[in-house]
Image 1 (cartoon, rainbow, N blue to C red):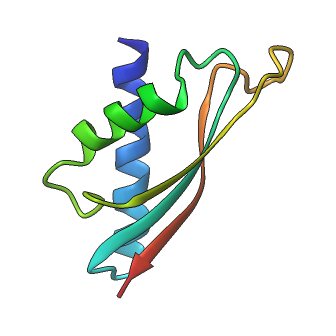
Image 2 (cartoon, helix red, strand yellow; image 1 turned 120 degrees about the vertical axis):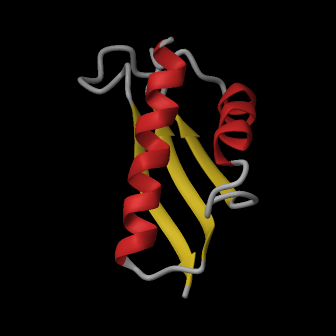
Length: 87
């Protein structure tokens, strides 16, 4: 459930950014995965591909950074760092 909620929030934010930029599509996404987010790069990629199917972000290139700092204040978070769009 935690992962599903994080992906819903992420996809909502991506859609908001794309709309604000009047994007035709999202071409790239950079995310930061906290050490306690319960995601590996592979696991996140699977969830992203599933969540983005049929959306403006389908097929977007992913750039994923994984933190190993369990003491970071955001260690449980998935943080959107940037969104690249095509207008």
